[in-house]
Image (tube, rainbow, N blue to C red):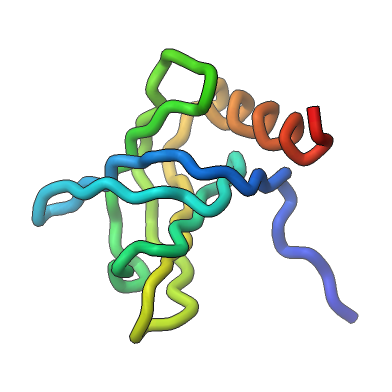
Length: 108
């Protein structure tokens, strides 16, 4: 029996995200985003378990979303890409992302 792990709407969208860690910051572009996290398909990955600070603005919005995240998925350690789970995102920001992702998924 298989099941879908993800419980949130996931939007395939490119958004610039500032990623900060102990070594400084870098800018990455998302492949997709949900209220639970995001995925970078062209990022040189951090190791699984690494903690980072994230800052980004959804398309059409003016308020920046800021939260901590943890790298939870590195599909190809020799290549690029990493999935980051949001750790301390506010309920309001998570709801805003969920609404945004749902609208994109429904083609609105």
